[in-house]
Length: 204
Image (cartoon, rainbow, N blue to C red):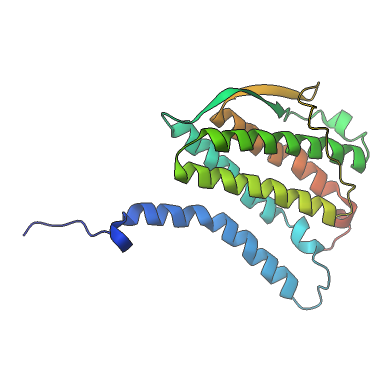
């Protein structure tokens, strides 16, 4: 007659169910922002949505959460070999001298490298929950690419054979990879979006 632990649906642990739900909150926020901006009266253009910093903030949170999850993983979370990723440091005096298209090419090249690296991480991590987190980050990279297209920024796809250069370095763990991903979104991606003409001329 002692206390018994009650399981969720199909015998699943309710704690893991709640944890999974909590990880979906940032994505739900981004979707809600889209609905609110597109249905708001007297706002005919969806540019307010893609310029809203809260959307990028939700992607940054997911990248940071994935980094933390990878840091806590004890086995089966390594990379098969060091992977090339973009540098995240920004020399503002140099960055501000570049025009938007040049900044965009640097961001797009970095996102391309991160997409490839995250694909490698996805293939090397067997844990289903971690795979779901990785998939979300990969999807976010694709979404950012669509945002750049919506801002009339010319699409730039680096050659598949290009894997190095002065704006890159290499990481050897998945936690390092997602730390780079987090910092790249917080740095160069945010700088590019905040300076895009469609966003800078958009009233709040």
